[in-house]
Image (cartoon, rainbow, N blue to C red; front, side):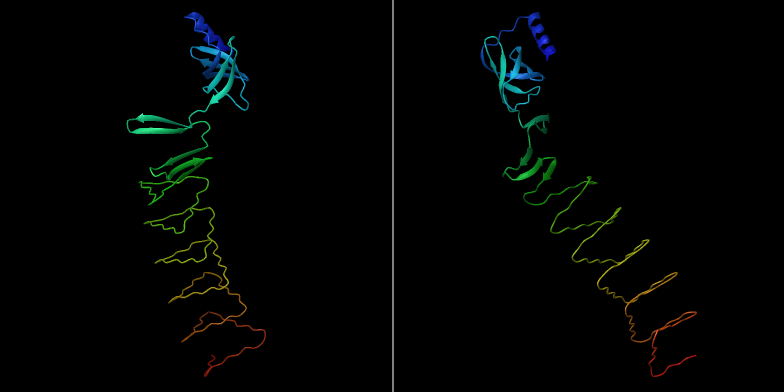
Length: 251
């Protein structure tokens, strides 16, 4: 603050002395801030000023309204709002839009006033008022701590798909899978259901060690032939054992 004022006044003494700022209300630019003391540039002069605007937190570069008395005592009585956005032309056919200080929401509208893009509180929204929103590229990557898709209908088409998940959970009212071939590879596969129904032309199960079924009741229906082959067989019951048939051959 003191350095800024010293340099400014030194420049005035080194050349033609700048004219005094007449008493009145002037527009100035904040050059430096040191606590409650300000250095404000008014024309060719830099004045020491104090804030007289409740709630105003000055920053370097702010445009302010300055009240100056006959002794060049200056007081900031107003602040001119900075532009909410800054538009720069980077090339004849390119432009950049930057949100300025105090811009709480940045919006882009089409010619009909419909929302195309909105950024607020760290959240960006891209909208397509009519038609569809299409991303076309050789590769598209989505990165984020969380990715959420909310739609009434979701369709995914791909020649090949791969998912790598540390943990996955699927909740659905109805689930239908149609595939020519399905292979499940797991250390443990557990199925829990109120009712399990399997339908197939042929069923083959190959177990290297133990195959166990525990149930309240077991019923096996075979329309033609029931075959049971084993090197040894043992049938044990706690109460009755009944065998029914037209012919029973033992041995």
